[in-house]
Length: 282
Image (tube, rainbow, N blue to C red; front, side, top):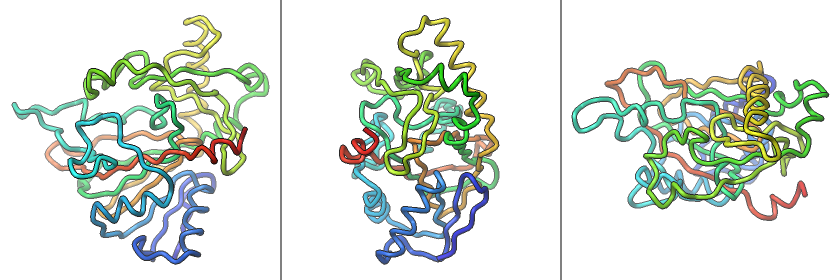
């Protein structure tokens, strides 16, 4: 196993390992590498859907994504990303093409904590289509002390697509009425013990206890610390890459910009946090 660190604060590239036949020591190394690096890439894999699901389950409990139409028909826990970029009339479906194009964490609108997201590269375009990641540990560390004091104890509400409800048309009608999920803006990671900023700028609806204007102003003030932190890693995909990121302490976005006539397809799993893990910080 070889591990490279493209950035000292975020990202790890792992090669020389087959995730289908990991020793206990290799698995412990991979899991700790992921916790240490926020986003981890395992190169050169050749997996079936069943093998990808089995490997994903080693990180935690899997949950079917709320967007039901992108779930694999034979495996509800597996989402197929990048299908349906063309409408019946041949026009590009911008909702699908640009999906994930905002800085965000996954599933903050779920009442359960989304521990991680894992993607497996199935079809990769010749250019573009990168995914960018940013450390929210470093975003929090960069905040002025006065701002840290202002946000201490504050909580935010999230729904799918945020205030603008972007992408709501991807949901089934009954899933569009889910109540907001509520999370602290500052969180302590249940496994690392480190403090990070958690104020998803895309899915956030409002910060509790503030007027709408005050809430919008505070989100606007926090956002540059999150999306402009120098602790970022941009991943250029290859077929066979497995990429997992920690939603508890990182933001990500799809960079887009790939040729419209080329496929960009990934298998995705959503990994939830156990109740026992959730209790650690408390």
